[in-house]
Image 1 (spheres, helix red, strand yellow):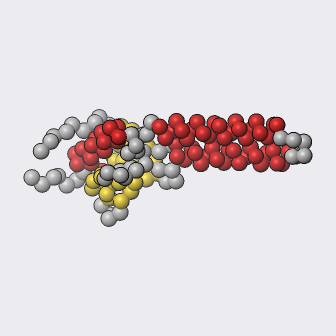
Image 2 (cartoon, rainbow, N blue to C red):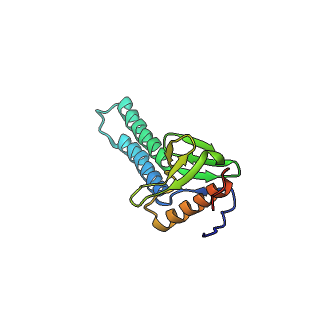
Length: 150
């Protein structure tokens, strides 16, 4: 059996490309909305211009939700930050992590029978995602309650 050393805690896994794209597009949206609001013809009044800027800010807010994804492991457990929710699990609550070929991100198998996608690890970053899943799996098996059977 391959004995892997778990990474030192705390450790954070986050995608490299997703935040760059999300925050880059957010800047483009806000700057574009402001510039467009300033150069609109005179027939567009202040409420129209403000509405355009607010719309750009709302789109930037949605892009922030995508850019903030991450998985954080510490001494007590795992925090999974997905776009809409933040999930916190203690080590004994997590049974395993799996990422099948073609999956966009790994799934955490939970003791309550549910599974949770961990969007902070993106399969598009091939080698990084494999390493992250391997490290996370090692931590889960190292810190979980039930030892592996031999």
